[in-house]
Length: 586
Ligand code: ATP
Ligand code: MG
Image (cartoon, rainbow, N blue to C red; front, side, top):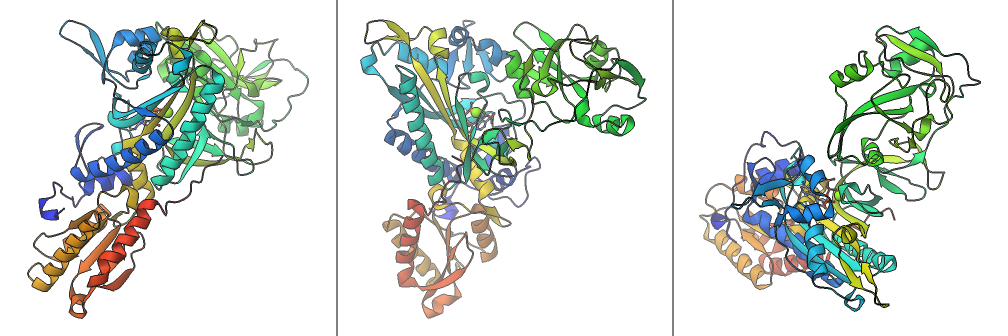
């Protein structure tokens, strides 16, 4: 490709809404252009990278026995009513929902469990046709609450979604492991540093589920990992050993205390001279269900925090949010900061495991500027249903090995593997005939990869202050040739020859043939992030060109006649993946 012909334009300034390096650099490099929040045009350069990612995914899916197909993006809502997910997706507002000219309700596919289950129930009759794993690579549509970070959280984005169908749990386990192993290869071939963590199953439902997380400070997910045993989990799911709190002693009489303006655990600790582990915090949420919104109060030990995803799951709610001040005042009759379980009515109460066994604790009195002391469960207030609702914290002891201290890190979710079981096949009456001639529901798994998100995650991990540093397997082009003087025949001819030789050798090269000064060309080549750069300039007087690896920045002089050979070998090594080995936790 000649830069003069390339449909691309680099920008001098960062876009005003760019908060992350990948968003900033992909926009400035001309890879993406926003047309609406979370909706982007991919330039030819971006599309080359996205096709390379898709191709890696495709090769590994095929090698693992997957069959590629293509399902419709437009889906009838009836299918979602059959599976029982229509309410959750519509209420959460995540679904792009539309009506056709006959009034039929449709949606743009946010995911495809329903459609594939429908296809399979109409295609497979017998256990003899199983197992089957099918996948597709296509646009998905989700009206995200906060589209942001460029390709990281789009409303239109490219996903690879695969679905497996087996006769039983054993079969599902084999299909799941095959996909998991393929994912490890895919992310390693993309040159990403990642960890595999236990995940919450979310709205899709099902049992086992793991996420592939690219480690990056800008990641939206908080993770906990154990250096001793390798346990890793999303905080939405993580468990840890609860540190012992101070004992409360034999029950004493409950009494009311004045605590003027003392609204937080920290303030109470010094005001009442009690450690936070002797307090019960009451955290109010508003939980949305299909037909109502309920106020929910969660009790947790004062030195611990609630994880809202765990609360959502315990309630089986569609959505959850911390209650606003108005709601707090309405249900407690007091200003925020004084909520407590005693006498709290019209509210669903849940308790975290951390409050079990506590005696003589302090809690809010549902009266402004007052707290209750020496409160005891059973006598002053019933212990509500107990669940694990606690957010694990870095520094907690690992619950799996009981030894390691959990470390915190942030991750970008690039892949997710789920064991769905029979949730969808039962709801949608998708069954096959077993060996004994009986009908049994398919045992399913589903497996997603964020293809466009991988591009952003790669840039998060591979950039410097000058621009993107693409790993060879994902680079839009592998080599850029920069002639320093377009009016010097020796320079131009050398550059042209190299360009032809590289292309003959099957190397993806760009010749920056634009007229003008070399400065902007050099800057652009760094911003765009080509893995190799060849400078044809002054050193041609001695018959040499300057060759540079973007990731290292060190220049070396090579005779013009050797350059194509050297570059071909270096690029081929890069394609084969000097790829970083995965930092997978298990
Ligand atoms: P998240 O928790 O980030 O919202 P999710 O768990 O809802 O993602 P899945 O349903 O598991 O997403 O989708 C499979 C994969 O698709 C994810 O692992 C992620 O890589 C990608 N993905 C999901 N939502 C988006 C989005 N809005 N933009 C880009 N990629 C996405
Ligand atoms: Mg997910």
